[in-house]
Amino acid sequence: MTGTRVLVSIVTHNESRDVERLLPSLFAQTFRDFSIVAVDNASEDGTRSTFAAFEKVTPLPLTVVPSRENLGYTGGHNLAIGKAVEAQCPWVLVLNSDVVLAPDFLERLLDEAERPENARTGAFTGKILRAEGVELRPTAVLDTVGIRMTKNGRHFDIGAGLQDDGRYDRGAEVFGVSGCVALYRTAALSDVKIATGFFDNDFFLYREDVDLAWRLRGRGWTARCVPAARAWHRRRNLPERRREMSPAANLHSVKNRFLLRINNAGKEHLEATFARTFARDLVVVAACLTVERSSLPALRWLAENRARLLAKRAAIRAARTVTDRALLPWFTSEPEGARRAGA
Image (cartoon, rainbow, N blue to C red; front, side, top):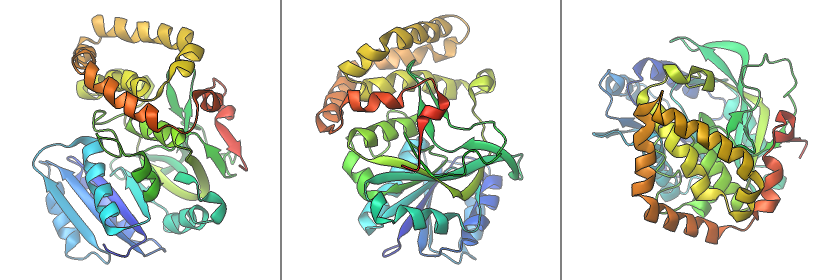
């Protein structure tokens, strides 16, 4: 691992079949100066056996870290990112296991990331399209070309569900990047690390990439989409599929909706967005009290951890170098306002 330019971080939990497709796409990369750290979160489906088989034939440094407990998306990636910091790897590529990469993905992404004009860009992504089925079959439907923020406290993947008709073929600055496929500058991650990790471990899973994007923005780091770098991702959790999501995923989604603002939204932001966010909050709380009572413990957890969360918020706010007012233009109902093409 020592000396490689990129550490690839993978976190798994019962995802043996996905690993069988992801790892060969990594081994086929035209860029070769990287190592892989895979953190397995207490899988019971043979994922560890799959990794063991690949360890025998891997052409690249591959370290598998078995965990007896489920550390979540955040805990698993935090462990791997910590190894990148220790090894002084300048870049960390964070991947979901249900992803396959084009052979030139890393080469194209790094060609852009290492340009001098991008020295303050802390996060990069490519053009991520949808993959289908257990085979992760590539499609021409967009999954994400970055994260966009709205004024009512929601966030979406830019381009999600649209046909890839070329509209996003120009590079652009975006608010942040989806954690399914994200290249982070290790120095940027170290700069925004908080007591609960690079990714905030309080999130566990879901919305943690948005929190990280907001914290990076708050410290003056930008994010960029490089469409020439292509990958495919099987999107499992979508807003329109909420009732099909697991109770645990929905619980964390509710908790993290509020945690996102507790961490990042200052007085000026809250005043500018209150009318819209409050209306949406009422809908979410009402749902917890009626049709989605399994998410009610999320509100209880927030109340029980109030003092600690407010202390963490104070530390994040004290480290901010960019004002709420400067960031507010990124919070828009216009999807095209979420990209700054050519920036």
